[in-house]
Amino acid sequence: MHDTTALLIELGAIILVLGLLGRLAGRVGFSPIPLYLLAGLAFGQGGMLPLEASEEFIATGAEIGVILLLLLLGLEYSASELVTSLKTQYPSGAVDFVLNAVPGAAAALLLGWGPVAAVALAGVTWISSSGVIAKVLGDLRRLGNRETPVVLGILVMEDLSMAVYLPILTALLAGVSLAGGALTLLIALGTVGAVLYVALRHGRLISRAVSSDSAEMLLLVVLGLTLLVAGIAQRLQVSAAVGAFLVGIALSGEVAEGASSLLTPLRDLFAAVFFVFFGLHTDPAAIPPVLFPALALATVTALTKIATGYWAARRAQISVKGRWRAGGTLVARGEFSIVIAGLAVGVEPRIGPLATAYVLILVILGPIAARWTEPLAGRLTARRAAPAGTAEAAGAVDAAESAGSAGTTGGAGAVPASR
Image (cartoon, rainbow, N blue to C red; front, side, top):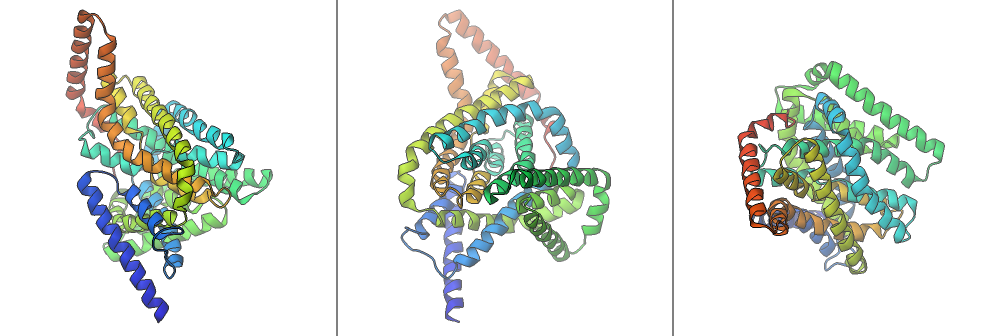
């Protein structure tokens, strides 16, 4: 009874603190992720108030948080949208991978952490935060901008790539042989292909079988199915997160919309618990030694993300201002960087503090970059145009581009529609 009482007190205090931090972040206009990480650092090992009774429960909640993050992400896309993105956005996805994964891998090798840690840190620096970016686009009222489909296309490519990347990373972390790793990758690719095929051909039948007029029944069936598939995927070393993502893709229409609205509060709760759990297992004293590498890596990969967005928007024939806006919007890292680092800390413990500092920097810098990259780039460009006539001409071009962008906000139809 005493243990149960302590558990309830600790959990209640943690959830209350998270709620207050979330409200504070909402008023300031930033993502609550850095505050959740800081809360974990404060309560965890080396923090001001270590937790004991609730640690096991929080660990389980963190696993559920990762699963729900990927499930809700999968519910946002249909199989046809993913296939379309693969056909049209794969060059941008390749550029995104090279420019942003390579710095992370190189940093891990320079720090002497080995090839497995290099693969993990490459993922930390590669994947942008879909949640933070979606919120920024809404806050800045850019959902109708012409560059927004380009940004969302890159995010879709990254999300789909996770279905291949996570099984590879899981196999490497488990220390399986080359043959075992190849088998795991084949299973992952086969599973993804099979799910996409079934979702394209028989998605309505699956959704009809899951559908229910009762919100309670729909919640239980979707959540139960997701946890079951995630557990089977974990047993096959494909990654529980990938299994949850594929369940989300397989559901469509009203079922996906209903499940999304029902599961979003649960996702937010358990995702917050996940970030706290990651902070709990990161010693605050380990962050200062890696602060400089994290800052340097954040600077480099912020610039490479801006370059990625600029290149992708230019390929889509977006105006110069739209190219800079696309680049700045992609800077934020968040949930998936922490998920990847959380998987890798068992092999290389130092990746945890580095990833924490890295995400803290970029989740704060991301909204700022989204707002100010384009105006700052415009000012720098204007200063380089020395002759007055040239500056006036540049101003006229920018005005024309802005007018063209404003007149084509109907291009938002290319944005993948939420189901």
